[in-house]
Image (tube, rainbow over all chains, first blue to last red; front, side, top):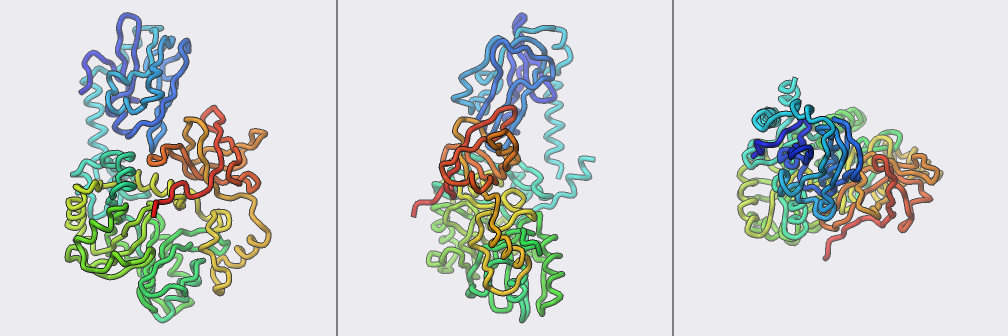
Length: 133
Length: 371
């Protein structure tokens, strides 16, 4: 389910790194929690982001969710196709529905993020909580 | 901590059925309820074009019995229950002495000495205590009977056809806002032609032990016709498109019928009732704010609580409900706005995060079903 070469945050973003370029999106768990996604707001290329900073908004019919920068860097590209087809986030959250690409400011920050198995355990815990009653 | 809070959630008789079906569950006013099954959009569209089945057993029921049951209903609510015939229902408001809403509700007249009220889930205990203290002056008994009923809503253009297969009661000739006692799949039920979606449909009240049997029967019969099980998410978007109020959003104990565009449920001439003096006074002095519908003019979505802004950037009102409208495919909402900004066509501005978004006042309801 969760690609093993990605890194993950507790806020349910994923990061894929190629060289000094990080691609960022939201996880399958996040899209499922949100439900039908209808609107995406993304930053402009050139925006500089610090770790933990809000850089965008994903909205479903029911909810508004802020998206946080998992690592710091400068936005080089945004997935502008999502403006017309936000539902791609529900269909292919780990692939076609990437949100932004960042030029990494400090690649050592990646080590603080979860790997796939740690994230899977984290999500399993959340699901157990949700089914408690 | 988590366990302590979650175990306190109230459950309907269908709770485990919802979980087995993989519904996404949420805490709704202290109840563990399904918010969606297949998705709000598909459930909403199914209800508009075929049918939707909703577990609304969390809704509260309060029954008033006795020789002065009608007098008690008349005293605590603003609509005129004396106009009801046996088997008829009306939308009404439970009023504070200030003429604001304790709750909104449906009043069903079962007989001269028996009225059956359907109230909001999270208000039912408050409503019961409120009516019971008012009842001291009347020869009427008040029962908080929510636990004796499950409630299913089957809504949409195919609701009648599907439900007809399970009952011999003459539901096809049942008028809107009327009800009858009958059997559904052999289960004794009160079948009302009411709903909260803007569609034709029925709300069915019955003993909780039959919940899974009826839920499964209606689902199975309806599926081939396009019926989907629906959660509270679609219930909310459906009622918003239909321009219906939700307690805690459009109405609460700070709003009046005049402000909420609900003057049609307030009958000042019916005799004394709680809040009448205040409502009479406000009718004479006029209102400053009013509930209005709006459509967003760009892609931004206004949400509950976002401010409506005056020309000088100051807050002039607030959004009470805002959402994408899955059937109309627009972003819509309702808001309190100054009366002078409430005419259809008026441009208003809504603060959305750091932006000011344009919206246009439109007539309510947003959606009216084809007849």
